Image (cartoon, rainbow over all chains, first blue to last red; front, side, top):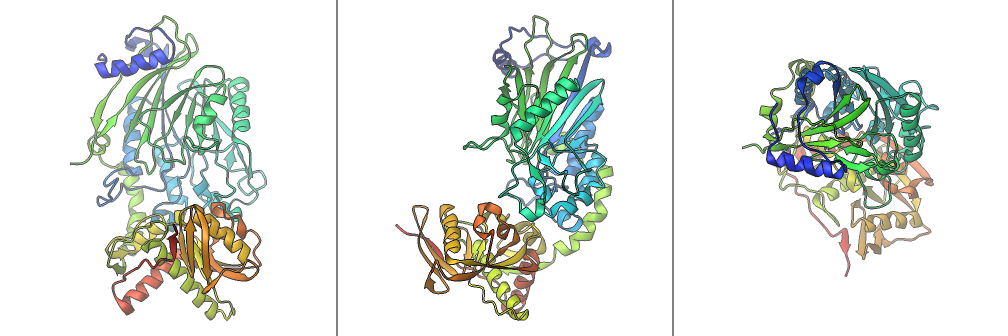
Length: 309
Length: 252
């Protein structure tokens, strides 16, 4: 492993200072990973893929030749080869955006996401575009759970198909996932969401993170959010939610199609750091965050992150 | 040359760190998606291929030819005018065919519902899909003039959207004049408005349509209508030339 370049060093130092820690630089000894004292979890994520299976047409003014799930699949394979402890998540709005959706409804994208190896996803507003029956029918092809904590589907046909939270384990790390969707009223036609009850995102988040962290003792708590990155008004967003949480480590966002160079680091209600990330849309980007856990001391040491465009 | 994009890497210390050092190597390099990501995943690609092939033929079918690029804009634009006019005319012919004795007065197309521009020259089915990816259908609602004015205020507040069959003046984000069916709007009269089911169901904060006097769900998908009307028109009249006509205007 090489050292840092100067520019990296500066970024690193800045972040270290923000974290309030006095640090000098060093390198993870490989033997710590080998001996299993350190374990690395790679979290990769997408949002608002909007059925962009293929790269944008070369003639596209802004994104010609870029993006697309067929290439995302290659990227994920590569990263998974580097670290099998890889968690792949999506923050909603898989549906709507290319003719594939019009022809094949939600079926094809969920087949592909299952093939690429997604571990969990959440429900965005566009998932409702053809109503609840089409969500249900597409979910037959998902080999991973859909997690939504603040859309209460209990009085709908999706009651048994969407989970309020989900726990999984990678490399001995216990990860708890909950999902937050945007307010449907005014955004999605009432007929399309039927008896789905919309629960307040903040109260839901506080309940879920406590459940996952305290009751289920998860090492890492991740929120899949389709609330949007931030708003000029008081509408709840990832950035306004994060400081009010206590146990969430990472908010993976969507809806606002926000491209971030790196995750936004915020302080939660307990003064700990929480990451907020988002990866644009149309599989033009994937977020990649690496958490290293120190088994001996049972805590997270750091996160390294890359957003590939 | 294709644009290059930066890979940013940052190390963040989560939770307070003690003197113990835990640091990771960080990469920062310029990458392009080709060299970085490589070719499409072959397994996923082979899964997609039959689906792609089955729609490619349909997508490349030519619908019409436009004399100019059609871009949406405010207060009015060629694109919003074209789609709104097609909605109004199609709803009128639907009512005729169905013997409904309904004469639609005006049409409203939400600005956000038009998802792409149409190019100058050949317009294929694929372009229409990009413009109108949603499965929305044409809906008629009979609403009071008062509700109509509420809708016009929303349109004015947003600086203009897609309309047909009306002339709307905007001053400081408010309605300054509104003519429907060649007369100044009458709050007490009733009007037939053509829109899509998303709006008629209260989408885009259009709550004034919540309890219309009457409602007709045509079942006509807007995208299908656009493809049909534009290709029929091309066969009959050739290249389309869309105009702005001052249907929405800013008053000083």
